[in-house]
Image 1 (cartoon, helix red, strand yellow):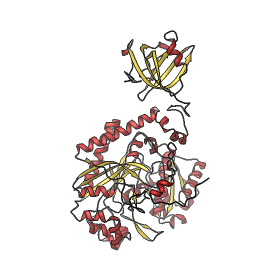
Image 2: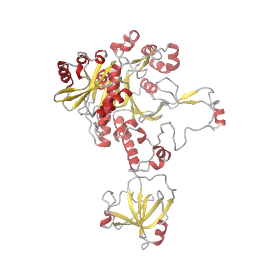
Image 3: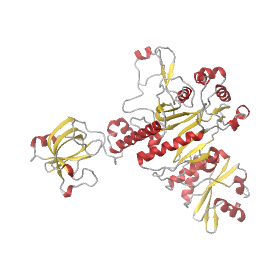
Length: 583
């Protein structure tokens, strides 16, 4: 071993002991001929002293050390002088006086310092990811990621789950996003797909008698990127046989309570809040509500239509928000502009004072209507009302976004608070006006509610399913459902979206064939593992908790992927490209 202790272990207990430490040169300081090096490894920092009066040869080597040189040092532990004690370090009371040094590897001057407090351009961080990952903050994020995965495996194993790996070369099937495809050399003109999720295979595992399955699965989707999306991400995938919806929700709640307790010593309140999809949209304007703060949408349609304000009278619905805050006129103008940029025709407002309501539109509201409005909204002096009047969907969309926007402006989201909820009973289908047909709102394999089966062919828009989303602090962590387990019902659902028998058999025949051999009732969930770790770390960008993520163009600046493939390999794959390369 190159070291007897790590760079975070040495204290006064090791005074006068010979030790060996190894790591990277974090910094080098020359104080009147005596050189001080902060030696860093994954665990911490130790100060090493090179004194020419102690050892000239070792000191001579230290004179040529640069940042990020990898060195091995042998020496004795001694107390630091009182004026040099660093209480911020675990090793801050000691230093190592060097008797020997080995330079294990040199480093060119790095493009940025390995320093948690330094702001570094994101593209540069990704290009030199191996340097970025050396920072204490990134090491801690990787450590948290490991701890969460270990807690998951420990808990689910004790609950009787079996971890099963599913294929990464699969049949291309429509699941909502574009597939990444892989050409087959052995079968010219045919392609594998990389899995968007293990959905079909985990259902087949239930038909195979596995009973309780889980996997930390790689999922690949060729879709536009956001802070919480990557083309390659990790999903906690789970499936259980002979379960109802409440059984799945209960297991997930217990799992997350275990994860937070084991990794952060945080006790979660269970069971999680449960909201129907309709209730969530009515109260928060979104199916991903942030429950860390109130400021719910208030339906004032009935009251508003009593006023002589045409905009309110003609609208399908009028709702408002009542942030417990007053805003300047310039703030109001910027909020109006923001609302219009986010789909509203306008944003009406009223200021609540001790004498009543103030606004340019108050003149259209009688005293009685004003009193009724104040009673409905429970608005207090020193606050404001912001109204949107439009179709119900537009009202929900705009006010839901405005609620989050105001929460950010007023600093209402506590990053140390974790508010989970379930959103249940989603519609199974949504109307695609562009293509004049029904689409699956989540995915094609969710079981309609028993009392909604009659609506499948008659009125698909009424069909709700045993679908559920797990939401944390306004972010959707995962989606799941009780699945269809009979080929007859699966074909009925596929017909609603326009997929007839022949096409259904061509795309999903292997799944439906498995159902004909006695597949049990089953259900499960797919949860964003990267999103979970990011939120636990107080982040929203999942790239910060992935070792080697891609940039916003789905490129890896470190290894240069995606890259060209030479003509010989293209020929072996029976592929010819007509894309002209840029000169």
